[in-house]
Length: 249
Image 1 (cartoon, helix red, strand yellow):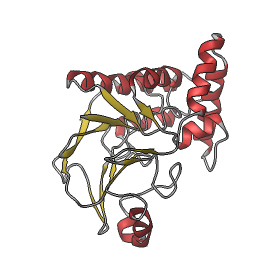
Image 2: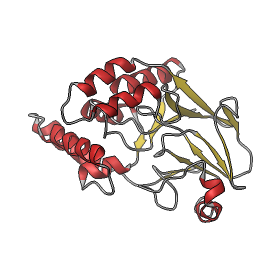
Image 3: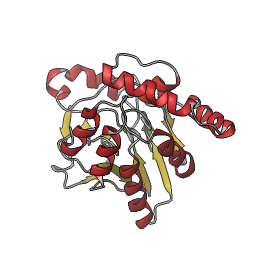
């Protein structure tokens, strides 16, 4: 089995909760679909855990923004990006600082295995294209191009909204699937949701587990109040970045 996490966003309480559940289930393989950092109050600790625990990770738009420059970010996200960069640069341990920057800068934009393709955003634009559930109605032609770019399964994050897109195009939320998507020969884009900043009105952290026959969506409550307090205590992080965690938005 393989655990697939995404969009940790510097939320240490959420990430450690997810890792504890992965350990409880005896799963040793973990991959991360990007946005390890950005928004949240513990970017360095979360990156260190990804380095230690994940067999592979890919670059998200916030990882890219911290290493290079933010692109098309709102003011709160941009300020959080520059604060995150200062955290990395301010580490007095030069060896650890260099190792973190090297890891962040070397993140690939795609991960391809015999079973699946994994990207942060979409197989068409792997770092920053959003695939929203409403797109099946407002932009169905987009899915023709997206589904041409992978063979069977594609795992994504980026929108922080978990669920399964089929070629129809159709979209099924984890609730509609009873939190389990049975694998067939049908192509699917599977959004694993967000560990650290869910946006589907469910504040519980989200990740997925891939087995030979199915993808299981997992939701877990965590100590969100502690994370909110940490955000509120950092002047460069907008209070909204903490408050939104309480409502999953």
